Amino acid sequence: MAKNKKLKIIPLGGLDEIGKNMTVLEYGNEIILVDCGMAFPDDDMPGVDIVLNDITYLEKNYQKIQGIFLTHGHEDHIGGLPYFLKAINVPVYGTRLTLGLVEHKLKEHNLLSRSKLIRTKPGTVVAVGQNFKVEFIHTNHSVADSVALAIKTPVGVVIHMGDFKIDTTPIVGDVIDLARLGQLGKEGVLALMSDSTNVERPGYAMSERTVGAKFEQIFANCNKRIIVATFASNVHRVQQIIDAAVKYNRKVAVSGRSMENIVEISIMLGYIKVPEGVLIPIDNIKRYNPNQIVIITTGSQGEPMSALTRMAFSDHKKVEITDKDLIILSATPIPGNEKSVSNIVNELFKIGAEVIYKSLAEVHVSGHACQEELKLILSLVKPKYFIPVHGEHRHLVLHKQLAESVGIPAKNSFVLENGSVIELDKTSAKITGTVQAGKILVDGLGVGDVGNVVLRDRKHLAEDGLIIVVVTISRSERKLMSSPDIISRGFVYVREAENLIENVKYVAEDAINQCLRRKNCDWTTMKNALKNSVSRYIYEKTERDPMILPIIEEI
Image (tube, rainbow, N blue to C red; front, top):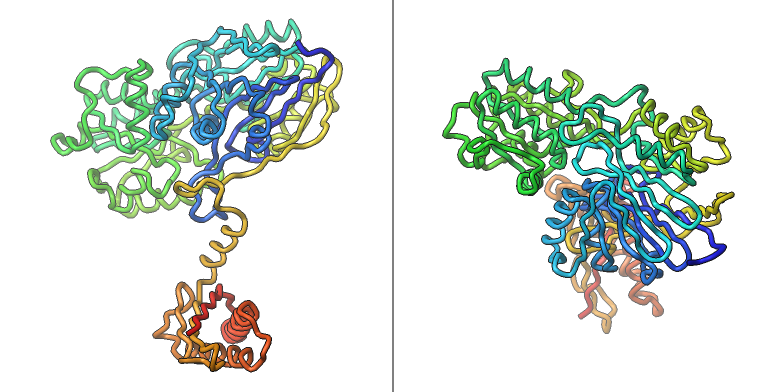
């Protein structure tokens, strides 16, 4: 065992942002990772599919990595695994449902056969390397089989809470293991890393069971077809929808690829229980009266290609929404998705459907702890040092202030950034530097080939359009062979701007002729002169700045 060394904690994702959670713990020549998530692209990332963590630091230190420990099966905690394991193949530890979701993801990437997945359960302690022992502790969250991790190191215990809430009436299983957390607190905890998502909300998060009661109330008084959109991973929510459907003699159909996959996995593993004959294929819904059907679907976040979006815009092959449908949006918009969700709700109202969403009824509860729950964990664990995680910058700062209110000294709380390195031993903690951290963008099959320059060009094209100027010259005769061709895309409709386009031709022609009259005019100079002249003219006439793409052919 290494002596006189310090424990390094390095968050690579999940700070100053919602998503792509990933934390490095390093001691001596050994590293373990907590979670390996992804994020969805922001509005300023046109064309990007998903966002991953920059793992340059881990690629340089891949021989030290002992394994990845997963807290739960949400995309922002497991979504980056296929891409990570392609680069660095290490063991992955997780609970039964979490690994069930991971297996499906790895199958899609043809990685399952080469990956080492090790199933654990709450109460299990896994020893890896010489310096780490990881204990899995049962928690409550909006996906089953969620855990916190108590990581025992040579300098002390670090507790990583993952995403959690304190649900005293969970749908399945026990309440969060507060007794074990309290016991660890009495024994002494060096550092606590705790979820900051709901730190702005006072009080307690409501129990998931309250949503089930609301579903039953809605189903009891409804003679319409019911369509419920929710997160695919919230298997407890799906179970409660099924339970309400069974109680009121309705068949259940599932729509949306991720929903179909997760429901299938959850039924197979026993996390969702459906009586015989209740679940029917989406193709069979027309065999029943509308008041005999419930459809559970994806699209609660207004995702462009999701099942609910396609239904709302009459683009779904199996389901056509009418004014005889009741739509329930059983989710709160993730920050940034509010406009997309609002658009969906408006479209559904235009069709004449009845729509119930959170601002009208309690059809969703959060899976994240609110202020009183966060304070309870801090008071139970009594950490020497506190590191708020999983949140935007204001969340982290407010969580630090909350910790101060329960007695954690301000100097012992650390608001970090992705890439920050904090070093701890038994008596001290200090931020000592940074490592490379950031965003890797995935577009189709391309990983990392879309960077700032490409995004800048995409935004330029989206905002201002493109003009292609094609000129053909004779180098030997030093003259233009024909009038330039002007191609406009996303700038103006050519037939309605013929004068402008003709004038652009004259400007382009003049720029080329001036270059050709100079003996030392090379290709680069000629292209720049053409681009600058056309750009300047268009801005003078339109006050718009399209991308100019000069193409010079020589014969």
